[in-house]
Amino acid sequence: MGREGVDDDPEIRSSRARYSGLVRRKAYEFDGLGDYCDKEWDLMEGDGKKFCWYHVELPKGNQKLSQSAQYLIDVLCPPLKLQDILSLVSNGPYCAHVDGALVFRVNSPAPPSSNFTFRLAARVTQNSVITVSLGRVPRLGFSPVGQSLLSEIPSVESPKFGMDRGGIVIKEHVLDFLLTMNHSEEADNPVPKSVSNLVVHIIDTHVDHLEDVVTKLEIELDSVEVDLDKGGFSLKRQLLDNRRFPKMHLELQRLLQVIAHGEQVFPRVKEKCSVKDWFGNEDINSLEELIGRLRRLKENVGFISNRVTAVQAGLDSWQAEQINRKLYCLSFLSIIFLPLSIITGLFGMNVGGVPWTQQRDPKLKNGFRNVMLVCVGTLILVLLCFLFPFLYGRINGWRKQRALKRNWSINRKSFLKRTIGGGERGGGYLRL
Image (tube, rainbow, N blue to C red; front, side, top):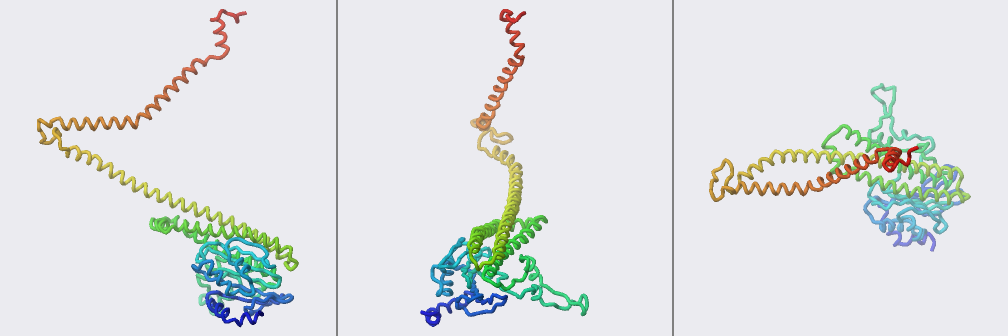
């Protein structure tokens, strides 16, 4: 069955139309000379220097892995086989040749709805590239070379400097976005002239995306540390109740997992691409630089994780201090009310002979004395039970110390004096 016959199948057309609003698809065709154009979604490879790129964006949500696989099956099958599609959608690091094409992925198994779940998979041949990502990846598109990012921001006249001088007005949220973005040496994405340029561009945008997320975490952590330095009982209590830092630590662990996947996969991609005659040497060097950036990013994430642990330890110590203060207040109240409870207990006893009372019954005149004797005896027994190990240890230590002093006093004389003294007492065999 040809391609046209497959597209004319009503079941396939209905299944693809079912997920048309959920899965975003982009298809580009490059001429190999620095120009590109949009094309239809036919999953065909290019001819000669031309090559094609097909990109699928899976929706971010609480869908299961099987549902994501169903999305790709409806979009990529045919001409891709089920084995090829499952190799793209499965979790974990992977890099191998599948059906003659190089397939690699760095899919993290975290929930798809999380902002710290990253999935990137690619199927590379000599004249086509198929990529799958979870949600939108920043800077994945292209722009003409030399065009600045500020060109998209409208230039308006600033009334502060007069009508003859223009200025650029940037909203605060746009400026925050630009400050948190990490770019390569060039902020614009040049149009790739080969498949190897396109592969480097895809991996580069993935690393940039990770760096953007790490930068946002650093800015958030810096702001929280500044607020903590200023103090504030309510802020610290809110951070503890919301478990902000444990959640941040979990997010950092997810980032470390994705970075670890990249450290496993991208060197293998470089190794497998280096033997291809259509993969340029400059792109091999670019992959090596990206691997180095990924390793430095891992060190940075580890440093942030240590900062989060230190801040959480400070909050825990502050919480322990607050608990100790409350316990101190309770102990102070118990010190105040304990004598009062003892007095009320003594004068509330239903026995005879209680001082300053009218309980003068001759039959019960010694009741108070007997109760006091029982209390004193019980107190002595309790003290002995608690003090006996301490006293026994002190006595035993005193005996050992005394024995050591006796041994030291006996051995205090020098060997010569003891020998001479012994010779004199033994008959004078050392005399000349």
